[in-house]
Length: 40
Image (cartoon, rainbow, N blue to C red; front, side):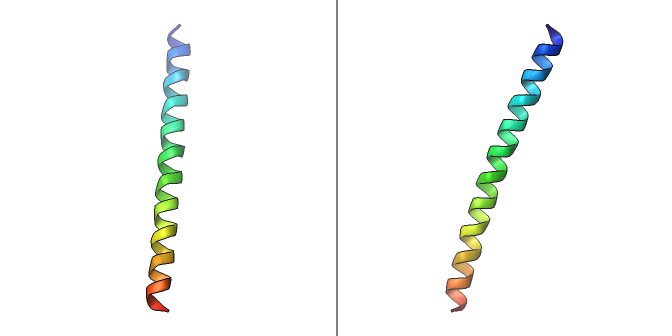
């Protein structure tokens, strides 16, 4: 039972990490696009 809980916790952490990473990269991408537009 403990292993199942640990596995679920790892999966949730991984899911949250991937979600945060995609949000962060998406935000940084839009930020870089804004910077490029400002330079032009």
